[in-house]
Length: 374
Ligand code: OSB
Ligand code: MG
Image 1 (tube, rainbow, N blue to C red):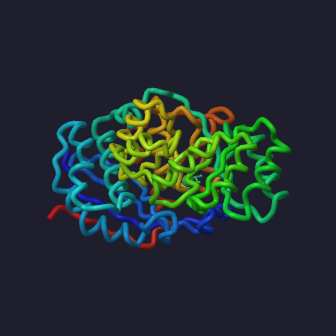
Image 2 (image 1 turned 30 degrees about the vertical axis):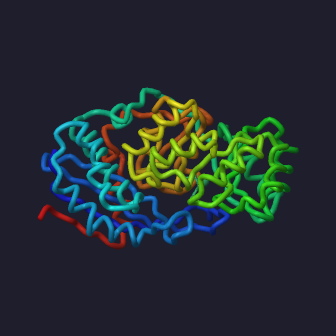
Image 3 (image 1 turned 120 degrees about the horizontal axis):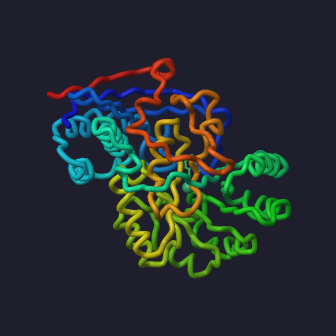
């Protein structure tokens, strides 16, 4: 397979409700959608999960656009993909350029997606997944008050989500967790701090132990591994790392150091499918369960997350909720929906292009740039 062009679109979409974390609040999504077109006429799509502002990590939609246009698209357009190994090897081709993993991932994933389309093979199978159904949970943002939080959770429990994750931060943690536990004593529950605490808060974080959480996600700094290892020794609750894990090497170090007992894999954060699979493999070899995180994706990124979750090590419910949790109208049709409450089907999709509603995508696009082979 030889790519002929890469089309970048800047897409603006409003979510049904704002999503608030310890680092900020977002309702209007500003994303870069990458479309790869092959000489044979195959099409691949992918979504860049960098946010508008550098608050989750250092990337933004603006920086991703520039990095893709200037470095990653021209490099990928020069590659020849003769086998799946060439697609898998793209991560190494991109690796001389440092960081910018969300931007790289969008290009890498569009190539995988295009390869699935060109070869007529389901993406999940190409990635190494065999499961046909996956359990999913939901991530609940910070709410105005505890009654509002409990009402939201009540609704999600009724819809059948396999576990609930709540966002926490100093001043919004022990009280909401205690209130949830009073109303839902048996609910599989976890908390995500998005790096809002410091090691000096260990005493405070030990209070979380009484709530029987399945895990606490990224309590300490976004770039830390060692303090998490110190903290894990003081907690009964398992630590799950999100922000700190960018590569399979990071995963190995974190596991060896005892910094986590679970890993959240986000394809964007780690630079693409190949690195996500490598992290999955390291974790699995060490008996560490993983789950697929989310970045409030549109249906494009959502279908990719579902495909990845078909791999055997994704034994815990992920954050890949149905489309309707985020958008009134998704860019894909049909949208991602429950097969049964709390369960999604891994569909045998040969890339997501056939599901993309180009009319809707065009309607929400406010800039387009096509990069051809030079
Ligand atoms: O830390 O997992 C996170 C959303 C944006 C940025 C970071 C995170 C999240 C979520 C939402 O938790 C997951 C989702 O529903 O897509
Ligand atoms: Mg997280």
